Length: 91
Image 1: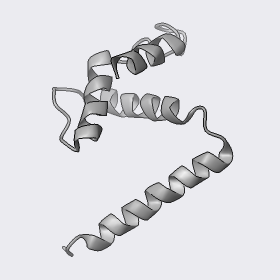
Image 2: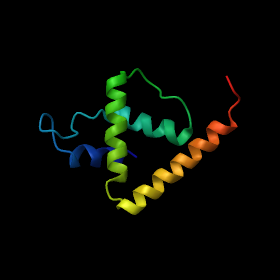
Image 3: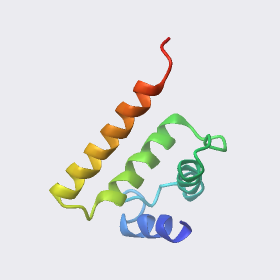
Image 4: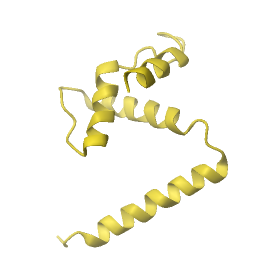
């Protein structure tokens, strides 16, 4: 995980040139851990920084996918979301 975050920051370029050098490594690592552990995000991170990190990490995770692979991933995510919503008790 540390290696992946480091690669994302290096691959994205440096500060001020449109790259990801400003991606907080601590925040990125905590986001990944929160997903893997199905737990709340730990730490005091702002909403904008969290949204930026989510966008960058997701973009990098799917950057090598072709159209078919990405469509299959999105369909699987949608199906899982629909099943999760259907299993929730009503308001």
